[in-house]
Image (cartoon, rainbow, N blue to C red; front, side):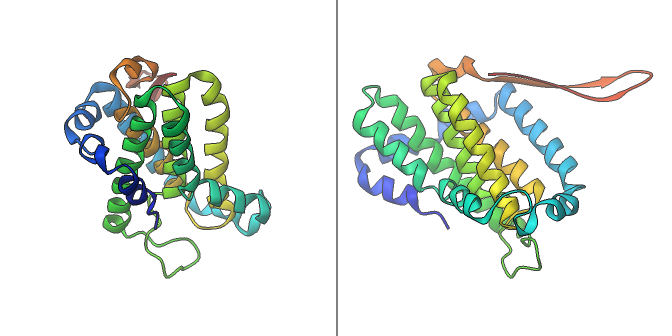
Length: 227
């Protein structure tokens, strides 16, 4: 269980009330872009669930990623890396809102993921005794940090942080700790929460639309994403 946000709150107790204020975050979580992202995430998660067994067969026992590489992904997604990034922003970034939005993101993401894990109670792969598989917390925190850095520092940060977030997600398959759909859900949760916790000036950075397409030859969804 990740506990980094408790450490962060203890370190910056003076900011706790501001960081945990629900109104601005809930307002963004209910706007059209968040609803579109949530819908897309739900559709893709359910679609991936059909292939959970085949994804596991392809990745388990480190067939696609070595154990040493997967251990790096495990460390990056543990939350410690995100905490270090937020701490570095606090110490060296002159724009205070950057570290505040990152801290806010980590608090909300961790709270939501833990609530979902205990609510869904999904068993991990391999007849594990753990029933906290859905969603992948490692993936969620990695994508939350990646999205926050993209909002704060632009496409250069995104070009580095999002591949690392994808690497973290893949490492959970290689370690046989999560189903494919767990990782997809975690990625969307991280993105959605980070967007909702961003400052208002960055609001236009991320937009998404999901629309149904029905024609004589094809039925499905059209997902438009700009970043």
